[in-house]
Length: 335
Ligand SMILES: [Zn+2]
Image (cartoon, rainbow, N blue to C red; front, side):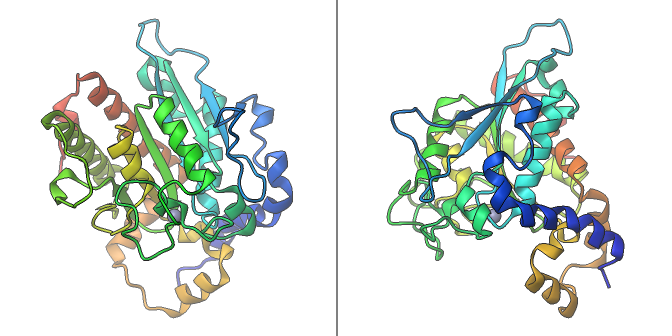
């Protein structure tokens, strides 16, 4: 039996969030304001992209306050988003946890690029969904199928057209205006990292790519894979194209925004189990589909710290790739 009392204790963090989210949400459930994070609306004031229920999608734009070295580096900015599927509460919790650490100068991410770094955190990309504890938004649309690239491939409701939803419009405008070096969209709960669709998959509907862009994709893919092999043992690398997602955030961000991106699934049944009693029962009754080696590996890697460390490695490589001074020995897979 996987479910020990210790694991139940861990999972109660998420349960507590679930219980407080609806009432505390508007007051900033994670207390980010008290850490003096500048919350700004994604969008221009003349065109507010509020949700059906009137929620705004807030960005916590945090600049590292203390450079770690006097060596001047060009400033870089990243995006870390969570909660696009509202019922994946742990994703929001993780993004908010990271935001607080970064704002306090306590994160490994603070050391990137000699400290010349900003990160835009979006813990609640689908606030209506979070409040209602549902995968979709208030129009019953899967927001992670509502972006433009390969839109409509999915069997889940992708909306009447790409960017039909204010949530995805807000995220689109953010990605296209903030010049990110890389972006991570946090989800849960399976041992996957989802890359943008590869140029090599030859799917119809993708723009033509230059040799340089293809090379950038390959460098990014190598970084994603090699660091996962070392830091997130048991993880599988997928692409949005092979999963037939269509309209996914990472495809838009890479193919339309030109920004290296991934969907990072947190693999945390030990933490989220109480959030869904149905999941719990299925977990207990179903023979384990994952082999023992993977489950053992997961025990070591399945922590916020491990995910933070993984994102740190990825961003480090993204900076190198972006500045064209990539260190191939570090980027090439070591498997
Ligand atoms: Zn998700």
